[in-house]
Length: 544
Image 1: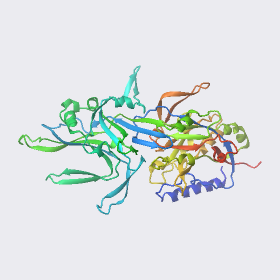
Image 2: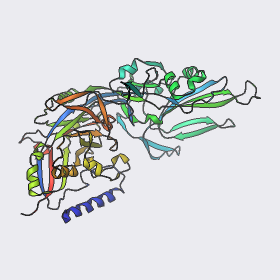
Image 3: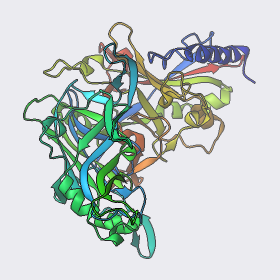
Image 4: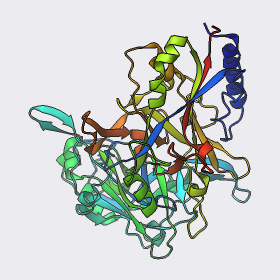
């Protein structure tokens, strides 16, 4: 049985969750959810060992969200993100019609956005884009090519069917197998001066009387594609090429999206996008199916090609020298003074609770009951405040994720937390478990990330066979996506125990951001000594 102070604490947490549910503005919620008043409970602090671990080329296919663009991070370096995807007809075996003549072709891929108001002049919605990183109004040279690389979903090895994996460092494989440039319109904002626009998109079609009909949709990448290519590749294709998915994907192998820095403007940016919601629409005219119509009678038709099937996000990183040196010179024995977390092919932190593990017998013998246990990671604000030439600071990840590194699974506190989001963002659920950035109200910059590991610590104490596993810490975008992706080549961490680093959380691969946290190895007397990482556990200690 836990004492009444623990019951009070649970009631307080529930009250805070309820009150925050009315507030849709994301702010400093992670650190204050449980609160700092522990009702006179006795706390013990334990030293930890925390060190950096570089993430080498990693599986980046079939991600729910993919990056496209160039992000110049003033702290971590430059990441260029390209993308390749298969395509598929919305319907197979549909007759194109006789004597088809193409009118236009567009590709449309929606951005993540939200409405900010109504335009006073037009009466239309005004939008702001979400998940955009880098300079506002940054330009890119964007090329959308026919992909000639045949992506497969599986392969056979000794009679076993295995999933085909693709990795973030395979850009050259797809770049050398690109075909025709498809977004070759004379308007350079379609290619050489492309930017992610927050404007509402407008599509003009004709009704049955030939009058223009305007359809408005939320912001999207909307590009005109080469008409001659689609006339030949689709409208003039042999009927069997359009008959089934496997035949079509062999025939038209997909699209390759490639970005480069614009010659016009050096400032760049990057967007996270759901390409699976994208589609190519071919607008054309063909003879009617009415046999009594004259040969010159044609009707408007459309054919839709979806951006579905196998896909891969391709990252090219140029790491900042200080960042590369920090993750290359990590100390696995005594820990590091700073922890560098970065998504994509970046880096994570490994945390060992050795000091706590050495005190287990004492804790069990004395019958101490764990009321709460936390790891609080303090952000090195000075290192994160580096600015680029355009005066932009590095954007900070909203969340970090702590997991069982040894077994690549969530810890008990993650699994036990059924709390929903207390903001309008569904990715911000599991608020008791935490890991949400705490933001300073004045500077608007992050200060800490707090993660609750109470159940994890209780399990180690009460279960004699439980292993005091290593913990991993990564930046994350969606807290619900915690399955792991494979490294291209696993890394031997400890030859004596045959321990390998072989995979990392998938959601970290989808996050282009990074942060720098204080580690454990900060000497006494240093001005930052009190910011070092430690495990804090609040106990109820029985009277002797």
